[in-house]
Image: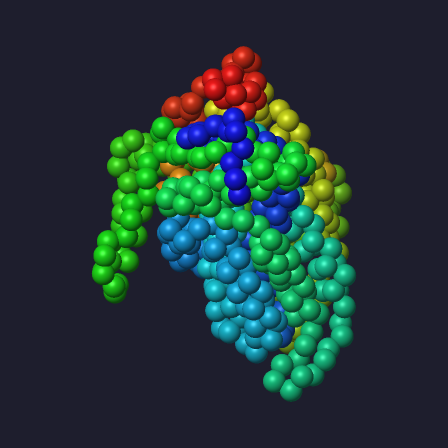
Length: 524
């Protein structure tokens, strides 16, 4: 395509991205990112509904349930580093489209899993394939949106990802309370299998939409493909502004001054060159000037995931325990008192040796909290997308962590059941805002060639924190409930000072916030 007169050459990428604008294409990427992250959220939530529903079909013991509930996290830990490497070397879109497509296949295989171990393997594989849904999505979104809109875009997309919670709760509500069976010979097709199959629909839709999406222009630029990067930016500008491709006033694009060229793989074939390249992509994270920022991000990510995953995972169980206790007691009681009393009562009821027929019916109370959280979370996220850009993100993170700490502590003090449930559900919602503000900071702190790798390291540490938190929760909730919530509250409060150690780029003044396109035109 011939270049128009008056176009600007060697424009830094961030300037070129600002010129490309924020419009329809940006909205498409934000929605697609939200739907993609929804698939990862679904992978960690769906099993919490399947455990009681598949208890009879898969012959699940309590030990089996505990292991199966961590299968998805085991997969994400196992696949995160490789996903980060592939996203940084082959492309964000490349790993997203293939990971999501294969995830659909494993949802189908899981639907027809004949026994516990086959379903466990499917969940681990699904966790591996869902890694790009977080690791590559954040960089992809950040590299398609102007820098001053980045934090807002991440919050909006994450608010949309909560659709996964609502989707799983609604289809669970519609399918899992049924009692029909269909004998297929090698398995009996029951409602939980239909539920699991329907959980694969978001992965299918996302993989199809990525067929229409170009690769990240910044990734293409760091790979030395400046012409391809320019063509993508022309397309972004055209869709955002509603003009023709030739109207984009940039002739050529260059890397930003603070950007580091991606290391190229060493010559030769075989395992050793690949391992050397992986090492080249990983080791810079653990050296100055990146190690300090990586350590701070890991501390906050572990703390955030511990709060989100642990409390959210145990919310249905806590709701059931409180409801069980309130059925036989009048008055107001603290959370720990209700949990302890219910456990004692359950133990006494289980002293009989009479055989009990297996019953996999799910109570409606299991779905209601998830539905309410999924409705409230988008509102909070969208409000945060407006508020966060107005303040220093370090202050936002610190305030959210202090609020989460206070709410966790008050769980053991308040004696109104409705208030307890609201605070129980409100804590992961606020922590979700914290998680996404942190992600927007992470994207800015690391250069393009190791950005997905930085996300993967944080994701691995966050998942490990979630697994540890869940195990500690299960060990202490029945015997040391008060100590458990005090530990969570104290840990979160201590981390409230961590954000102030970040050295973030200063925000542009109002004068500098004018469109960069005009600034560049004035220079020329």
